[in-house]
Image 1 (cartoon, rainbow, N blue to C red):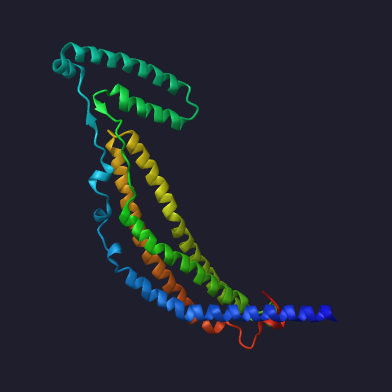
Image 2 (tube, helix red, strand yellow; image 1 turned 30 degrees about the vertical axis):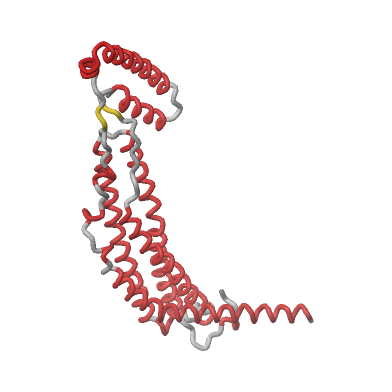
Length: 285
């Protein structure tokens, strides 16, 4: 007797939860989707999303390494006489030893990346002895792009939560197979597919900054190692420009996804909820 009572109590709790989630989904679709459409439309007018691509690029000083010249052997000899000449000879001798050591290290390198590092070190500091590459050079993040990402990240996360609530409402409203409402089921499944697409868009854009930062970090590291190769500098600027364009497109697509989903749901709302059909009567989740 107590077992039946416990089972009945659990069933009532499940039914109550299902009805609560369905009401939450309906409320989300009716109030939150229109609010987000208006919000995203106004967000597209934000000054951070209306800049020209060139305006978001970092200052020249942040991506252009300064390479300090080192006096050549002849200049040192002319300036310091025999002491300079002796010092130049010592430097040349040390340089030859360093080159030999560097070549040995490269030959025994286990990974291709380590070999590249050593060769960059060799080319930068020893073979091209008239340039000084020993000064530190840091490539900071693009502050403007970080602001835009932070602005949109909140919207991507909220979109995933809102779409999940609406999708659950529709799935809980699917009638039992024996009821014969296959046309309504087809409409419901079509709406769920559109919401799945919307959810995938938000997830993909939420992951995209990670790929951008990884790409930019690799380019910054190469620019720091190979400072005389200005193609790396240009590649880094191109990465920033492309990411900013992607972020503007992401904001537009998010607004449009809300709009398409709301339009589809509002045109078929009478088919999404089964009238006079309680979740608990058939217990189909």
